[in-house]
Image 1: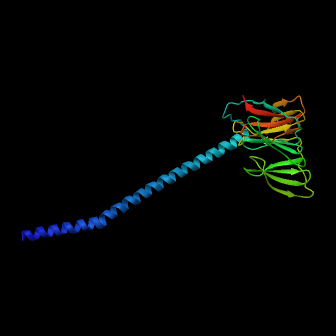
Image 2 (image 1 turned 45 degrees about the horizontal axis):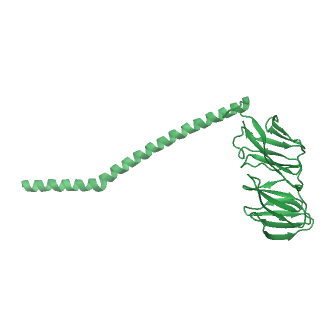
Image 3 (image 1 turned 90 degrees about the vertical axis):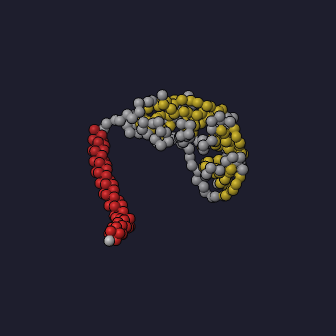
Length: 254
């Protein structure tokens, strides 16, 4: 009889153990998972409320700044300066504004194209063609396009001047290179405190604050400026052509 009781007790323990293993353990895991989900949801809701409060505070602050016209100086204010750098005297007249890419500078001299290293001003290659060049355009990293007075359009290899293709277009209008006014943006020159407008006159270059219109810096040349390039954000400069000279003009902060 005692053995039967012991066997019955052991059987009940086994049954309870099996029930715990297959159902009780899963129930505890499920309860733990649900509690964790509730805690995570609570934290997410709490963070969202804090973010909403911060967003509202930032909007109020920006509104106040806009209304009161505060000037925030994140960095100490510096002064822009224009400094003459490399200069190259050429025998032939430069007849179009300088065009450049990452490494090279392209100059049109009537019916001749000369290509220079942008940093050293060393001649890389040159090409003579049958008609005067009226426009230079960079197509991609390997090719450039020349438009001529006789309405021919030439596509050349940038590395060596090899002719890749040629077309004839009638009544092609050329682009005139005259005085320039354009903006130097913050994404082009990240040291700027604000965007700057560059104005080119006959013998001077002005840098002007684009918000107030006040003069920041002025460069005066003894010679009349014939052409001015776009802004070169790689070297922080522009290229001037004056009296058959190519002049690099650095734009920097002191």
